[in-house]
Length: 377
Ligand code: SF4
Image 1 (cartoon, rainbow, N blue to C red):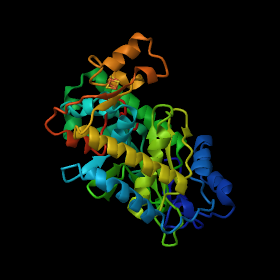
Image 2: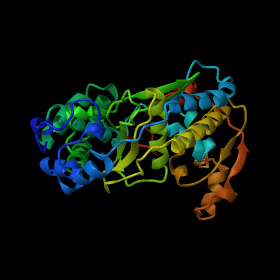
Image 3: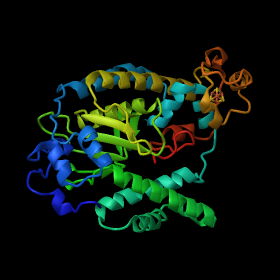
Image 4: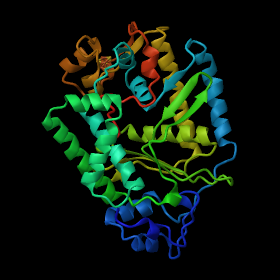
């Protein structure tokens, strides 16, 4: 750690609440100087965590209103879903909004038990970051070693690790160390008073629909006065992509439903570029996120229950689609030179058959880690 925890908990910082409540003498600038932050950390401290800045107060009925909207519009849709629960996470939502055929293709695939390399790296990095908070003062090498040791208690990771030849294990160690250092040099040391949580599962149930998320970092706690005091942050080792803003708003919607009050910020942060999606959250963004959930859930139910055919919309995402070799839409788009506008190669309602034994389980995975959406790090 770059500063010790005693320094972080000096007078002027409250012990309860989130990054939101901090009003150190001299303001955020003075506080960041006292903490001896790197330039990148100072930027996150001031511009993203916004230490010392006032927080908005959400309309008291906002969470209830959003829940009522979702319930009204989705109750008839979910009547067609015969299982007890339909879990929907960001991956399923993004997939069905991109190409319904890909959702059907994914659902018909047996679930792979082997861990892809990016996923294995992500598991180690997440654990290492958590260790930097719970066990400050150690070297990056020690964190990575301890993280690998801990990860081996997970069956899938242990199988990956035992099968991995030396050079793959080396790739994991090197990549994890690199990402950990990027994190430590870019994110201010997390104060206990900010109530940091790592990969905290949050979910919200609407009838049989369960919206689920696991943001990499959550700061702050809900307040009785309705101030928006939470910050949700998902971190990526890639640069930012178009769909990351929708992911951040999806997380904010679940947080709002879960806690009864919206976060003041929700973002996806790239550790590669140290950029983040526009973080402020307001009611209009949450309503837009709710509309996307309604449309996406409707599509998921219709396609997976085979009550209608699936639309096929080709694009870059075809590269990881299980149907790539047989899909007529992809073939036509590919032969045309893969133009950026795929509209004329889309097919409206291709018949689908969900052949996997339990496609609902695929949709039910709240933290599905697929090729197109590898583990956040
Ligand atoms: S190959 Fe492309 S267009 Fe065809 S189903 Fe898969 S993602 Fe959709």
